[in-house]
Image (tube, rainbow, N blue to C red; front, side):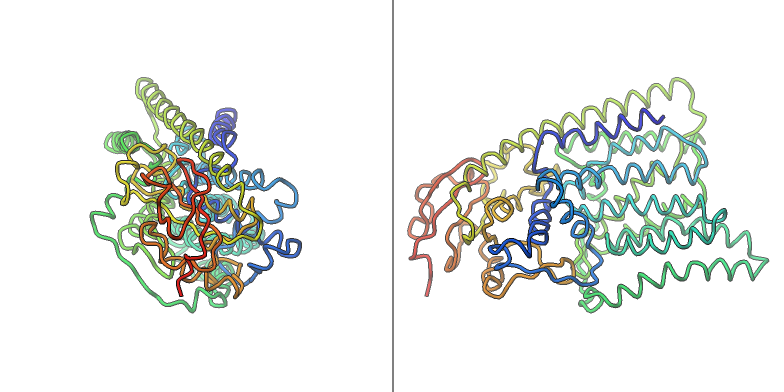
Length: 500
């Protein structure tokens, strides 16, 4: 079991050896922010653009871990260490939670590797992904040790909830979901002993009150409670996102295989699930159904519940009493699916490395301190082109994954790029006033066919430039083509582009 788990982890992180910039949507942006934080006092160019703005923010996982690593490892190596840890934490957490709730080791939790490369991971929500893993690990420790070492566990749990708060607020919420069933079971058992019930509840108060006080002190608490809902059809489509990477048919087959196997086990009575696991599954299901798509600037909110729900199918449910034929069939089926999925990921990431190499060639002439606007030839603007792009550029459900690649301008060329994440309620970085105006009106310039005022910019980087049929004459009155590849083209901004 241990050797199988170790081998599985090695296979999962193997694609990181194929790339130095993993093709995760938000990842280059996070890495760029870490570079800014790590060099705030030593780089006069970057410090003229940004400054740290530390606060009590419930989304600081990468910002706390990655900048110190940049003083030890090269930038891209440090980034891949964090990506690898984020990838493995949920799988490790599933194994630990299954052991704690079911009381024995099982091979079934290892099948959670099928969903390690899920939509939220490939979208670069690394704080959230790590938060799921940490929540599962902390919940496993609570269930295993709460009654054996109560004082020690309360201290660990209180510190753990603070860690989860700063990693990702959803991770904190998931921890309470994961232990809810266990606590309800214990409270029900002690219902005729009021003193025990009161003591058990009071012990939990510090690990609830402390992160709640931190939340009230954070900028997030004062944000508007704006809510965005998705349609019922779109919510149903999200059921594939835990299995989603690059080929939709393979994702659907994988989801169907997992669902079919579990349904077979359930209908034949060949499964085991504790109250703790059952309550967690029920709460995650209800959360997915009732949660909005966006709340207080956090998007894909309902998606996060379905990601947890699917991980719980491997952590809270345990197939039992399988006959030899079922065991062989299930093992072979999931091994083939896992191998195929990892092969697709390896191929896609290998293709992505070529894109990164070409992008570096395109931006090689950008000098430090330059101001570079970025635009994108989207799938809506060039649908035929996007039918033939490398797999790594889009999620299987159609979401583009390379939008933040221009962050390499900041990371490797020390140039200004106006789309760095600097939301005061989510990131500890502030754009200085001399660049803030450029950033504020950049959003309206992303449509490459309707570029507005380029005043203040030295260059314009066009992503997915292969989708534009006439780059040499594109916006020729304002832009002069310097170099091009399929992944991007670099233009010099003419003086006439400054509209007065």
